[in-house]
Length: 273
Image (cartoon, rainbow, N blue to C red; front, side, top):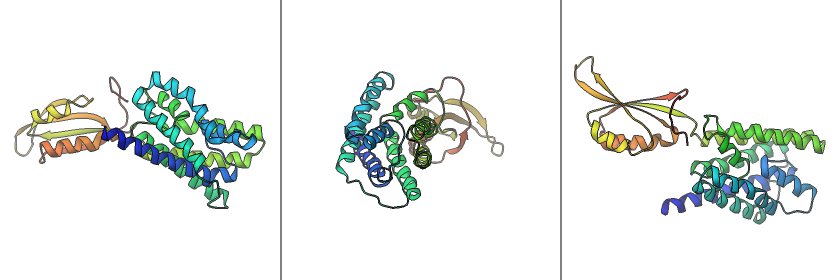
């Protein structure tokens, strides 16, 4: 329970960052974000509809679809994010922190990417095309920020064509690109690493490692200088889980020799989610 509460607080903090990016940087210059938020902004610019309400309403069908595909915990955290973002958008005043559209699109993109990234980091999302991107990358090792930037870019191009304002469209695409890059810096589950662990505490190490959802291969090794035989454990994991595995190794065998290398790709049965 304390962990879930902590994750919800992080999600709410991310929602506040997204709302600040919208209300203080993008909306004052009539720029768009991508996906559902971009559609909500368009409706807010050209109609009397409330942006915060439209953001929440348009996310409902995607949240329902994600419930059956991505799992209950992911969608519950996503609902918290969507509700909190909608509330912050309605609460925070709309004003331009900077009169420069270029600076605004950069810092707006950073804030939106930061808020989205930390939401993904604790196992949720900010709704909208984040859910579509999560479905797309569920069984593929694509950076989710890049996938979302591609989908959002197509929406912005369509908006520029319909509104006949390519300056705003291009500035919005710069903001979306920055959002995707910041998101990929924070959300790193697509990055795989391989650990080679040489230890004298093989059984104790395996007892802790095999509880996790990763396989471990045991390899017999012999030191070239000492001729002493030891076990080497090899496992492939994600950058997310690396900190936890390091903790296990230090607790079990502080003298273990560990070589950590970045993995280019994984074939076969590897749990990606």
